[in-house]
Length: 355
Image (cartoon, rainbow, N blue to C red; front, side, top):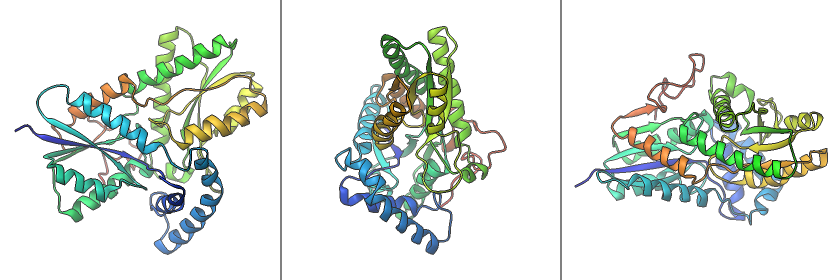
């Protein structure tokens, strides 16, 4: 009998109805990796924020999508394609499972599904190329806790990050190239690529989180690939979106990057390089809200490159990455060595998540 390997794909999650928006937000802001306060204070703040945003900002954004996040559907599409690719060759049997952090299907449900399937081994693949304590660490922490409670002790290999993965970089560059061609067809010559990642409060980065460093490395790698393809120097900048609350966040913000593009008389191509599938931050925030802001500010050309989704280059390399991790256990970045300089104290490889 062939070995059965469960591939658990981590993602954030999103509401599946209008009534789910507030509890989804409550789950999000109750995470100690998001708001690092004692439970009573965290609960008070989470309740206040989720109540406000479920009636205003989040409600308006999800209303544009029919009050349903497309994140689960798009993640399932990736899971289906990855499972097909993994099972093309004989040997082990692979089955993919989507595990969301803040809305269903969450860890408790997915652990049961993995157990009932009869998995012999688990490979964890976050759908976040860049590691952060607010995403991969948080999901892994919850997963380990639920596994412990369930009494499951299967050999597990966790891929903590792959910010410079060849398939991710190639698929990203090809998607951006399509926008370049469209922009040039529209008559634009002065074009700037804005690599826009989801922002984080500055204090999280100062606390040793390597997310910003890895986002910068991804952008550099994609920019180099684009230069290789075009034979020309690329005008590009990294920036951050989705700021919430009064704290100081990492920058520059996408707002500031767009303002600079206006001054420099640039058309812009936005590429959300920290996301691997379409969801509210891309389909609403970038495609509607920032587009309107850009056009109002005087930018003549505004384009947004698709996320990698089920691009063959990305899926094929994810399958290769998973297979390389089937014979090891523990937490490893792509290449089996830490990608983070020593100054990043929250590197997942050097500080494995405990229950």
